[in-house]
Every structure is written in C-alpha cells, then in structure tokens.
Length: 345
Image 1 (cartoon, helix red, strand yellow):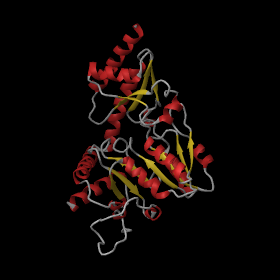
Image 2 (tube, one colour):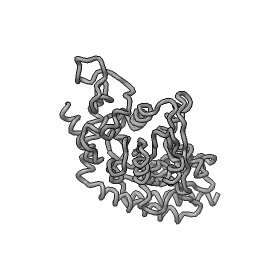
Image 3 (cartoon, one colour):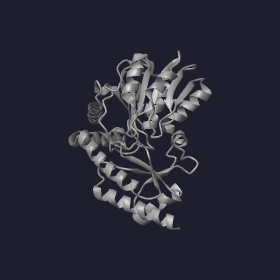
Image 4 (tube, one colour):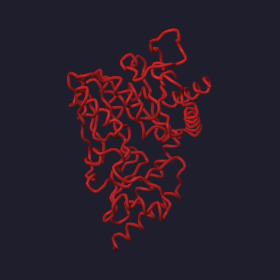
C-alpha cells in the first residue's frame, strides 16, 4: 500500500513540477488543503491579501480568522471580466502582510488570474503565496515553481479525474517551517517520540490515508500525463470557443467572463433575460438531460462584482476532457430553445 501511495504522490508531483514527491501532502479535499495553508500560516495581527474572485473555501476561513484571531484581510477587486490587477495587489501590501491567497481560475467566469505576475510580486516582497488551483489543475499545464507558488491547493475530483474526498497541498521546500499542522497523531514513522514529525509529508498526514481515493487520484494523474495537458488544454479551448460562439448568438443571453480563450478555462457562466437561473438549469436537466450548475457557486463576492447576485447568480456550463462537439451543439440548441420560449412568453 505504501508503494502505491508513493507512486500516486510521484505522479502528482511530476504533473505539478514539484521538486520531489514529498512536497505533495494528501488531504481530504481542496477546502481542507486551503484551511491547512491559511490556518497553518496566519497568526494574530497578520495581514493577508485575497480577491473578490475567490471561492468560499478561501473567503470563509479568512473571515473566521478575521473575527477570531485579529487577522486583517484585504479583498482586491476585479475587472468586468473577473480578472484581478497585480497592481491592486501591490497597492494593498502593508508592513504586516504575510500572505497572498489567489485563485488560479474563477469557478464563476472561468477567468484565469495573473498568478505568475502575482507570484513574482510575492517573491519580490518576500511574502508567502497560496494558489487555489481547484478549477485549473488538470485543465491547464501548471508548474508550481514557475508561477512562484509557495503553496498550491487542489481537489482530486475535478480536472484530475479522481474520486471525491481527496485533495492535495503542494508545499515548497522550506515553507513547511512556516506552516503549522492543524492536526497531530500517528503517522507510522518516528513512533518512538510523542512529538509530531517535522519531515514532509508526515508533518501533515496524521491518521490513516484514504487509500482508494489516493489511488484514484494517481490513476487520473497518470491518464493526464499519457494524454498530455497541452492536448487537453487544446481540446478544452476548441470546445469553449464553439460554446461561446453558439451561446453569444442566442437572443437574450449574456455571457460573463473573458472572450479570449487564453484568458479562461472551460467554465462558461450565462444569464438569460426573463429566466431565473435555477429554473433555467432545471429545464436543461429535465427536458434535455444537460447538467449545469446554477446560483452563486459559493462565490458571493464574485457575483456581487458581476452584478448577478441579486438575480440569483448565473447558469454555469462546464466543459471537460470527455465532452464532444456534439455535446456543445446540443447545449447551445437547448439554451436557444428555452431562451426563445421565455422571450415569446
């Protein structure tokens, strides 16, 4: 079992450009990874910079630390397309700033954030840098070192094609000295002492591993390596382009997010004149067997910035490696028919 776990760890490390497999910590999910990073790093009186683009898995831990540990939080804004400006991050830096926490790709608009530019800024100012790669890992090539991430969190069940209930946190060499473990216990190593090991990844992996989920994650990473992330990225972009062109031709439909393919992943959010997002999603499911996600997508500040919060959010269509041109055509036609029926009514 240990050999299989190590093999999965190695595959994921290779995919992320990690220095060595021990830099990868297995967690319960991406939310767990983000909590480990933020609770492990931030101390009373620290200042952290994040953005309105973030998921609640970043926003809520920071709000909790703000309310209970006197951690100060600055949430920088974004463009109408949902992209932050690194200059806004630079302007937000204070003498007590300790961490920058930034999502790689918005789970609402699909907008890719300038993570490498912010990483360069973090290095320049000697700040810790946490990247939430929930929507990007497995969809776009990521090299944690090249983007300057000290910590990079992700889930197993999205682009990595693993099961639910598994996630990871990449921790750069030496950064573990600044990240406290949030739980302690048996690791199967250094059992002669009653102190938590300081070695990676044991410092953060107390208790039994979720072996089936880890092996599923490893299998997903192996598939991605075999098919090639560049090929998957090209496939996603081709389908996204077709979806955007088709959706934008539908009367009464507004697409939220960047138009340029190199600025987004295959997450497309729309609003439809005369339709509640939840009702529209229900019609897509019941009448066309097309599954989408409607609402605020656990990203309330993003929807407030887009002006979609008051209307119940957006309808989000998400593309992946196994979607086809036929899927996109069917989705566009379904949106067209439902939107037209609403306009006629």
